[in-house]
Image (cartoon, rainbow, N blue to C red; front, side, top):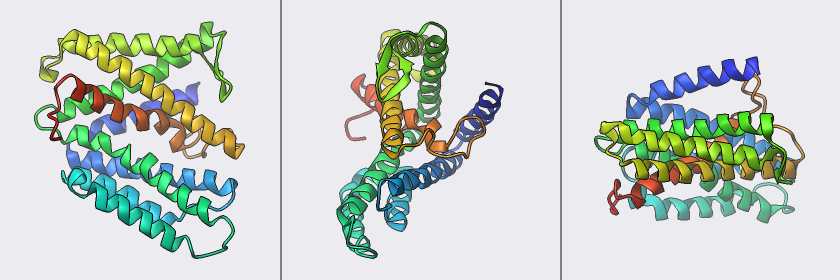
Length: 267
């Protein structure tokens, strides 16, 4: 627990500090995404053919940088097409066995880590409220993770899913309630421009998505027959083990802000 606390605190401080500017936040997200992609590549290689890593790196970096420059929606379709073409082309290198899986894993890795993760940058680049929304989304996801663990380990009795036996319904509800309460409290921050019910809704949507992201990554690890995605973070496992809930949570918060009218449809 001490190791988890120290590592989590240092990582959290670094990420929150990077929100100060778009370039610093983009750099941090790139580093987190590439570390997660590397671990995803190791997971896929345990199932057979590994991903086409150069193509996956290109796709992930392109999604994040295009979003940082406000060009994602203009070039999203060409980028997706290029990723597919490069995957099937470079996938021909190597053994013919596992060709389909190699191409599919590559495309999945790009969309899973690059496309979904880029919505954190989309939040940060919003005019006037970008830094506030980015910090709010991170805090809601972190609150979900912390309270799901605290409640689950203290009173959790009912397994949430066979995919992750240690997670419980009590912990999931605890994370949901805590995130929703924090979201409602965000209505007290005038810079965000949220009503209390809008914050509560955003907290609930973000929490549910974050916990779903955790389960998805758990399914990937169970399929690869490993406990952790890596060993990069002291006491936490790999980067993907910590980033999994944020991958789904970021785009969920973005959707919640769009749903409540705080993000124009054109964005």
